Length: 485
Image (cartoon, rainbow, N blue to C red; front, side):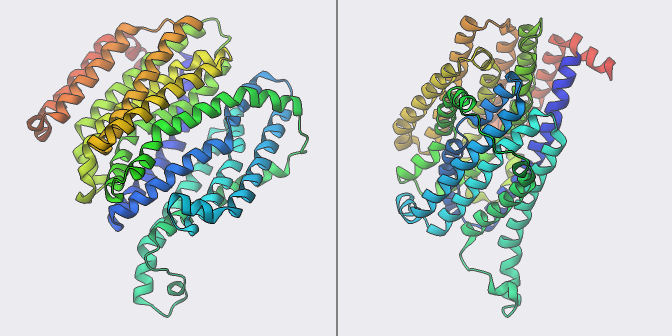
């Protein structure tokens, strides 16, 4: 139990560093949807989708390579220096080229060049923070990690509130003031990105000492090994971007209105409650996998952890879906956006599938078969592309949601099948499938049957029944946890 306690402690702290800032970012969703039309939010959603792909390119798998080689190499300082120097110079090269071609980029994606400039700087600042953040995780300094994350998101939220809510009021009531002179009318999208830029800059400033401490000694051989290990992660990351964000770009290319894209993007965020759980868990579990791979009962430990993840995730899925109409009022109190609420159960479940896939992916990371992870992600990306092209003309953004859950579900099953072949782990599939299946059925009935959805009686009874089912099957473990407390 001490192993699990260590993992849960790490996950809890990383969870606070991820969940609480994301909860603050949910306030941004409320702010944006309250103060701007869906068409503006649609443009922000599309631009952010492009940035996701560039974020992956600028880190090029170096974060995961850092963890692998930091735990593998005796000269850990060389790993830190080589990865930091690599990302530093590649980011500088990107900054130079992107700024030179900023007008061309703006014309290609049909947006204002000011937004492109902001996006370029945000991407560079974030890329330069990748290795310092990874270093904090490797050194098991989750509190420092959490504080810097809080600063980033908190500042971003404060600046958004100031620029979008207070500055227009100040400019209107005091037109001769200094603040009124910096106010730009109809610049809501620009203010959103400018706030993000300032928050990313402050985050990087927190890590400036890390760069000054470097001796700038570059280990070329180590770098080649890190690139070789990391490039499949890069491809997998791009494929993940296709699965998670390309739909917003394709909706735009298929001439779906910006207002519809905005509604889809906002309601998509409601599904991110599962993302919070999955992300916090992933931050804790990746170093855990590498650190405990050589333990005697490692495979059984991994199997148990996966089962517990499925239990918690299944219960979360059911609770989110049952109370989604309450959550939409809290987070998106603008009926203009509610037209896309029907995608939320699919997005929640898709992210749950992705979380399970993260657990199952341990086999190719520990056996250095990261190419297999790349191939699985490519298969998911192909499914995403094919179904988006097929379904968007028929069902618009609902087609994109179906494509997302289909891609992640397929990746999950493929990873399980291949994992059994290359790194067998004794998963309790009977229990895992029962928890997952019951949660899916109860969630679907409670949401898509109108009379049951409106009363909440069926949903609440479903949660109680499912909680009892979990307790009955996991009674021994639950009692042990209670007794330890």
